[in-house]
Structures are given as structure tokens and as C-alpha cells.
Length: 131
Length: 131
DNA sequence: TATAACAATGTTATAATATAACATATTAAA
DNA sequence: TTTAATATGTTATATTATAACATTGTTATA
Ligand SMILES: [Zn+2]
Ligand SMILES: [Zn+2]
Ligand SMILES: [Zn+2]
Ligand SMILES: [Zn+2]
Image 1 (cartoon, each protein chain N blue to C red):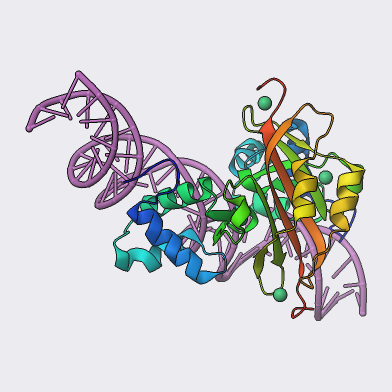
Image 2: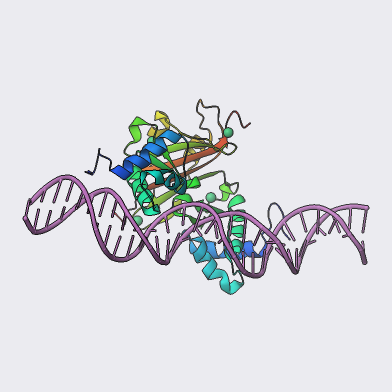
């Protein structure tokens, strides 16, 4: 088992399954608590699975919340270009899939000499319901 | 002492002074350690000052690193539009000041009905030296 | 000047997030 | 079948952040 791409290990599957069912960002320890019945008993087991899932782009980390959410875009499995919409009222988080935005940001350059290969963007505001 | 805008309290000044001298992101506990000689002995004192400094835009939090850096832009003291360049090699972090970028992102809208009033963008890559 | 309201500080304890380190097991290659 | 690589299990601990409450200082105004 276990390859650089494609196959997920047992623990990775368990964690991903649980995150995908949630469709909202989940905290690592909440994941841990909920997969204990599946046999994952300690933080490193969850964090390892998360690290890998983030690495392959199946899961993204919402950095401002220390929370993890399943990828909803088929095209960002490389995990190098992520954008999220976050409501400050109800905490709803949505992955933004906007080709113009991602094209603009992927092509962004400044005169610093930096070669960018990844970005993460988090927008904050209020959703319809929370206004 | 202490107003909603303009004046900084004693602890806020101490923390800001230290961060400004660093010109690189600093961790909260590293700040704590270094301002103990100035009388700040416990985490809440540092975190309160940081919270306030972030709120008024004098300091930004680099979310992907849990680190704090002094604002280098005179125009983002409202702290609602931040962008950073982060080198994965040497960890150098630079605040991006790019009017076109900030205009583009501040004006960003999608069809979700979200009203955005803030964003944070982190670019990752390798700087000249690290390539 | 009292006294109330508020903001800032000091202090102790603890919560929440994440990793180090090491042993074992499983799988894939050579 | 030996080796290397990957994944897992396990315990302990490091790191980041906040709760809770007592005290002090400041401002406003009665
Ligand atoms: Zn995605
Ligand atoms: Zn909302
Ligand atoms: Zn700034
Ligand atoms: Zn570098």
C-alpha cells in the first residue's frame, strides 16, 4: 500500500471519509474524537493523515481557523492554489472556484525576484443570511 | 491612557517596539521571552497586546506560521487587506504592497452573495537566494 | 471630590493545537 | 529473501492560546 499519488492508506481513508461527510471545516481533535471508534487513538495518527491529505490536495487547511476541509474543486488536487470565503457571522467556509481569480493569482509576479508556486487566500465577510 | 485609535498602552508599545526591530515574523512566546525584562511576565499580556496591535493594523499575523510581523505599509493600518510573500527556503516574509493586486482583491466579488470586507493572501515560493 | 464606568494590567491555571521520538508492522523493490 | 520505504501504534511533551478573576489606572460626570 501507499504511493506518492492515488492510493490512500487506511488511516488516510478514515480521516478523509469523515472530513468529506462534514462539508465544513473540522478541528483536528474533533476529527480524532470521532474516528476513535475506527481505531485511531492518538493525535499523531490524525495529524499524519491530515498532513498527507493536505499534501496531495484532498484536504485544505483553513489557516485562520486551524481547521481542515475537504477539497471541493476537482482542479486543485495539486493543492497549490486555494481560496476561501469565510463568513464572520456563521463561520461558514466555502472554497472559491473562480478561474479568473486563480489565473490572476497564479500569474502574479512582483519585482522581488520571488518565484511563486503556491498561494492561499482567505476572504472574510458576511454571508446573505448574516447581514 | 488608552483610546480606540491612536494611542498605544504601555504593553502595546513594548510589544510593538520589539516586533518593529525584528523585521521578520516573531512567535508570541519568543516575544514574551524577550520582553520579560520590560515587565511582561505572562502570555496573556503579550497576546492582549498582539490582539490589539493586529486589530489596529500595526501588526499582522502570518497565519501559516503563527507569527507576527510589523506592518510595512502605511496604507493598511485598517488591516483589512494583507498580502505576504513567504520563502519556503529561508522563511523570509515580506509584506506585498501592490496597488493593482489590492485593488483587484478588494473589488473581488463572486455570486455567493458574500460581502467581503477583509482578505489575507499568502504566496509561497523561493526567493532569489534560495533558488 | 466622589463615584461610576471602562480600559488596561497582573496573575494563575488550563485549554487547544501540534510534534518528537521510538517501536513495530506492513508493503514494495531489488 | 533481504532491503528499503512507508505506514502505524504509542507515550510523552512542546507549542500556541485563552479562561477567569483580582487589581489598578483613567476618564467622565454627577
Ligand atoms: Zn481545493
Ligand atoms: Zn453567515
Ligand atoms: Zn500592512
Ligand atoms: Zn529564501
